[in-house]
Amino acid sequence: MRSRYTAYTLEKWNYIYKTWAKDTRPSLPSLRQLDKMTWLNLKILQSSQTEAEGTVEFIASYQGAQGIQQMHEISTFVRSKGRWVYLDGDFNAQVG
Image (cartoon, rainbow, N blue to C red):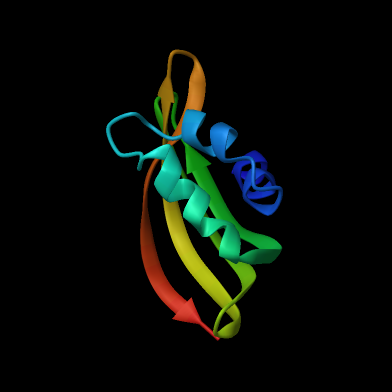
């Protein structure tokens, strides 16, 4: 999770693409459109995992076209070929 957040802050779109499950990931060009956001911080609220699946609840703050906002998400990760990849997320709330 933290490595993906760092990749978003540094606009490392190839890394984000490679760490997203093949079944649910968007196209690489559509990821590159997210560069209009400046990520400010990440707060991990809780996490859990089994051998095959994990979840991370977090709040990420960012500066976008509408000012500073926060994204509250519960992300699901799965193990694929020995690596954790992002499967999907449940956007609980928009805070701020």
